[in-house]
Length: 286
Image (cartoon, rainbow, N blue to C red; front, side, top):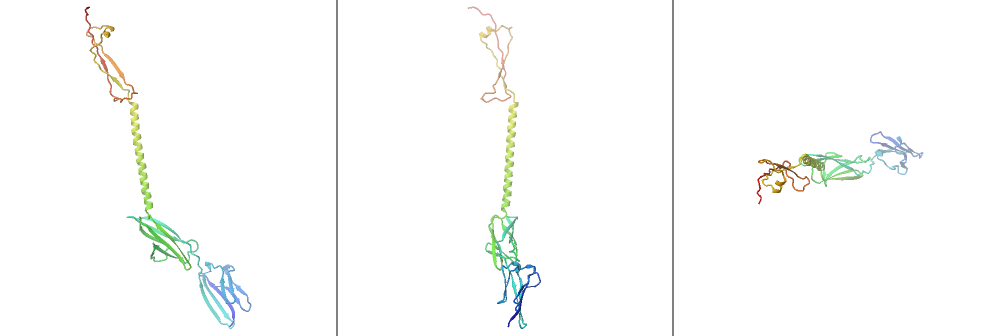
């Protein structure tokens, strides 16, 4: 039996089937049909075994391929092939979102993201440490509640039929980082207010003392003294007064402000009264 003709067709996942290559034995000419220039001269047909080669296969080349071979007797032979082209899956990015709960618990939402076009037909698997987490479906995010002070290790594994990759994240502080920052800020604000209060109290006391020192009057000391005996020389130098008359002497002593000794109270004063008594009489000679 001799081959008369060969037809290769291709049906993309979301499109109708169309002819991509036709060969007829009597002419030996290969006709390549390329709607929208999909394959861009990447097709290679082998006459010896009627196979079709796709060079530099891409993800868009996935689809249902069929070949139809007609013999010179008119017999037709058909065969279909499901072709899937996968990109190498990249290492995912693992992000976290935290929320503080009561009683030292923390709610964490983990997001597993695959960059580029490698997220087609990708399966997601989650692990806590080495333990597989059972999820109801293929989840790209995981929500868990953990102890805020514990150490927790989570891994997201992504895979397709030809490759796999994973990313591990260690949750060392849970939600405590935000809580500790809040406590630190509260303590810092309290210390600042305390220092300001101490400064105001110290400044007020200093101003009050300074005002008192500036407005205090000069210290005046007045000494009171009664003098009953006067030296004879002083009696002779002074003029005689009338009998029974008394003289009062007022002495005012002003203290020096620059003295290093302890100053008496501002209101303390002394007045000196000197009241000498003079006696006049006849003095006998000899």
